[in-house]
Length: 580
Image (cartoon, rainbow, N blue to C red; front, side):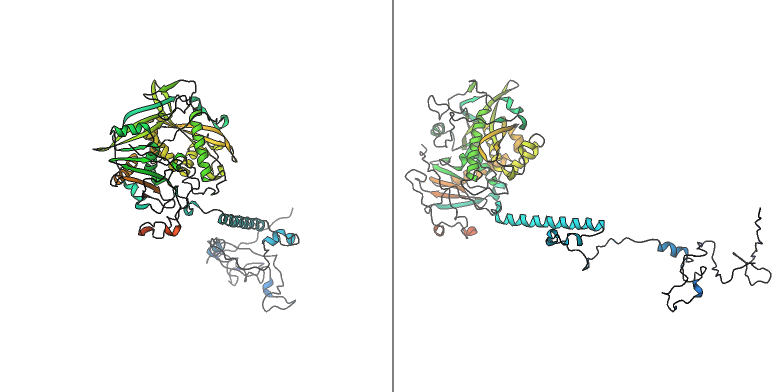
């Protein structure tokens, strides 16, 4: 067996490392020639001894000749290598900072161009496709971004061709402004928000009519087990104005009050700051009494739809989704709904007097008319005819109900599909209706408060099909306490009565005669006109006034934009008896 002999290990008494070969006493035997030695300390990191992968002849070295051998081409030469650099320099070179700044995209002529032509060019489909996977991902992102930009551009182009938004929509006035009408004053709605007036609890002077009981099974209706809306053509509904009411005439002759109105008229005044569409109320000053009336065929007899929505409805008279068509449909739905949810078994609650508007033997819708009186001042009282629609026994206590129905005509306009959201997100549906129909819901709440109803029932009625405005289904019925619901929709009762009190005080300062309160169709304000006594009678012919001849409002509206209100074509003229 061959033996491995360890040669002598020299000792260096003067320092670290092998002894100096030039020393006379110590020598390193078998020392290779031409091997450089780099001194190092104990903290240094050792490098490599030899590099056998190095090219012996480097033609790229400056000053080298082809085929010439350079002394530093040795495997043991590290004069041009940084392997023996210090540890700090070596560690610093191993770290790299990430550049997070946005890099500028310089123009690269070889970069593939992803334009619309490239998408449909079969010849360039292969040649211009990026080769690397990350480039493909980036290319898809760029294409998706361009597609989104294209869709947005087309969307805005289509929007520009649609009717303008609600803010700039021009609505029609509810009544023609005649040349002989004298505008006395105009009141901006901004002044109404600061008003406040508290009234004591009202007293019931008389209750007329009769009521049927509410069917509680409708509280369990869901969109999955909805019920079709029935039609009640045989039952008559009455929309009688104040001065045509025989009970109010009787109370006026007995000097029971100074101001007379109905709950529909009072709720319109109370919720005036929320209104967008034009409306009008006829005011008659007879002696020391004040009567608030409505015209026959007035907009107050209908129900507005999407009045406070930001999206405009089609302004086409024959369209089933136009403002007028939807108002008629909503009134039709509301009447039928208020009768369908009743228990029609002949069991009724009769009051002191029968229905004052029904003829003998006539079938009428069961309604309870409560004639209530409020004290506005020491010598001023207000009497209003208020309606309740049903009655229910809860814990052996009889409660009055008001019945109203919200209607869905097309989910595309509201953005909320009732059939999908009513069960799981009923709050979202109600919030959408509060946004789109704030005035209508506020008026219903005000009427329930005026009538002293213990509960207000809201029905959700939808079309069977968005293009079928004759057939409807009841999807749900929800009950609310009027005071709680008023708080929820931010309806302040003190502010409501403050508005009524200010208008009453203003009208009581006027001379005896007939006046008209008209809500401006384009501005949040109401105007008071002095009209002739025969206005709105059969023998009074309304001749629309030319635009340039219409009475201009005060300096604030010197542009005359409001006076340019064109009217509804089919307005019926009203026949009203003068108050006794």
